[in-house]
Image (cartoon, rainbow, N blue to C red; front, side):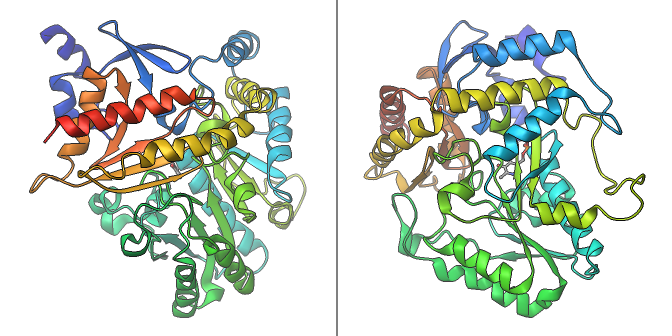
Length: 440
Ligand SMILES: Cc1ncc(COP(=O)(O)O)c(C=O)c1O
């Protein structure tokens, strides 16, 4: 163990309890389908499909093949002032899946970059229309929009913000979150109570004056902060208020796009079309990092001004539209369609809902929430030791049950494969229940 520990020591791990991890590292060396393989020769069932990323399963042969072919043919192409065949093709495919009207796409390398790009596009759009005073953003408590400065500022997870306080963007305010245990505990799917919480946007519009607000950004279903399905009618009402005041509505669909809710985008599922969508993860099935910002035609058009030979938006990344990522994206998008993945999710949703709610009567469980193939289980925290119970379940799953379950403090999160076998979903919750019985 000594030698193994010294090899893991140099790496500063993201969103990880580094010192605790390094005492007994959990190390994956390979993956296939719905399983990981560990360095001690075990095969683990992945109940989180990567990190909400790999809904189609790991090492899908069509994606592996597309990536291998692409990297041998065009490893990289200069991204500015020159394009390559695959990026145009992918842009066409992504926009053809998008809600009507969102027919332009800007590529990034992650969800965080997508969010910061979208915020910048919103500012540039208003300025180009002579409304440069619209500089304020509205996020939401318990929102997660990645870790860059813009996303962190509009985000509403205190742990992600507290170390960086004074350096957050100044012109940001937050809607109240929609999670209300008094009314909605153990709700299956969307809660009926809570649509009125959207009126909070009217309050903020009055407080800051709506004419100063550039955009509202929300996750249609907040994921990382606890899987919080929106109250029925809530997103529709946000859309109406944005329309009334000329505020752009951004859906952060880094998790919810590409099938997680049984549709290409959450916008389809809820029947609410935002002005911009940020996404990443499922775009390439997590195989190569890539993100995207989808925008409405009129936003793009507003910026296509001035002398034609000059750059219209001073923004972009060296790896925007990387050819190998594009190849992975094209392969992933074709699999979503060819293998009827969104329909599979629709069919699995009821089974998943029953399976996750089978934990609702457990004395250590305080709430269960689900929508599509996203689910969260809140555990009662141990007296004086918040987070320890969640951590213990995660570790015991990994070491004793050959199962990967994500936890965030005492919240267990589930993101099954979009093409899961129903019996594996059942098995996941049976194992978790057994562990809940076993631990303190
Ligand atoms: C809604 C949302 N936005 C942004 C991000 C950040 O994405 P990334 O980690 O790829 O930067 C995430 C990551 O989980 C997310 O869930």
